[in-house]
Image (cartoon, one colour):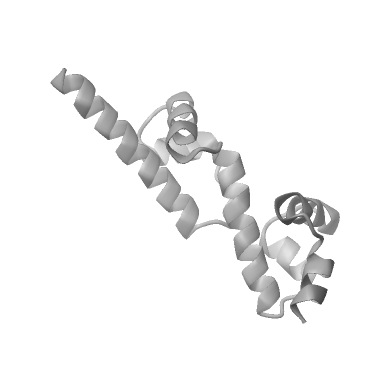
Length: 115
């Protein structure tokens, strides 16, 4: 039983480590394999445990953190195209789609509401 508890604690710590990394580096595009290596557990275990502990998939969480950062950059006055590049989207439209999927409104419309 002690081994199981230690193993479970290791997994919880690894998931927390991966989550903390995402929180501190939301604009990096780490793969789940890279995050798993950083956390010290397998990719499959990280994905399963992350969902169980945090209630969302790693990619969803990563995108959410990235979009929150994007909102901050827009609030600071950065142009939408610059934010898209800064957040490492391949195109302005891909960024706009991701933003709209997350917040239900386009970045341009969101900015108009803010002013």
